[in-house]
Length: 289
Figure 1 (spheres, rainbow, N blue to C red):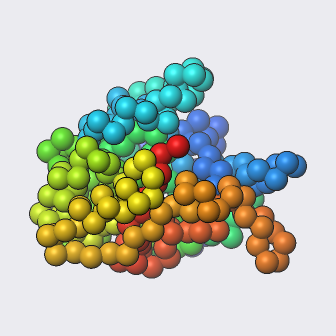
Figure 2: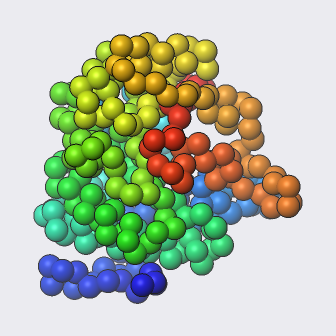
Figure 3: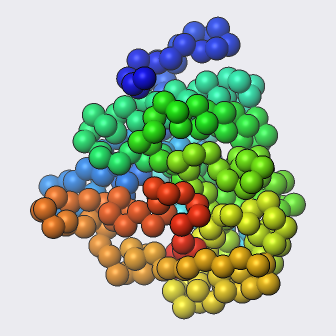
């Protein structure tokens, strides 16, 4: 069965979501669904991510979130914050089955538009800003992701979450199956920093999140690698670790490939987007600039 840009009918009987409505819920991640500006810098070829209000939708916020890029962007660009607030209001009025319907249509539309734009490996990022903040949101997206895995097998999804542990109300756990895996085709990272190493270690050691990789924010690569070692110590888990080549200043935002084509760094690297899922995804350090 192929996916087109025609909205699917809602199981709730509430009608169809128009393409314009769906597009208001989406934003672009320029380093994955990549187009190239004349100056060589990447631009989002089409929308392939969601963006909700920073902090307001982050129950697992930590001391390391003081310099949140999304919160800063929403402050200096009010249109970004206003759009995020509208999306949140729309989501919060929906029940689980309605969340699932809308989420699936967003995945289907983004997948179709990426293929039309020439993206050879379509991706979808949940929460370029924001996080899991309600059970209805998690449960609905889980249903949508399972459905999309059958209908859009070339689409991969990923995200970073601090909605775990008591501070995060264990919401991320609801996106995982009984064996600790996210839906097929998805990779999810436990997001962490120096203020929450114990929380992340306890989450991994507790068993629910033992299959997930960890992404830490740190002042530099060596500091981040040391934090990852501290987090993994005593948990009975082990995983290779890398420093993000872009944030570590080892890879430009735009990469020229051997065939002369240019891609955004994340579309080229794909460490956060392994095709074989969380079992092979590395722990990652994101140096803070």
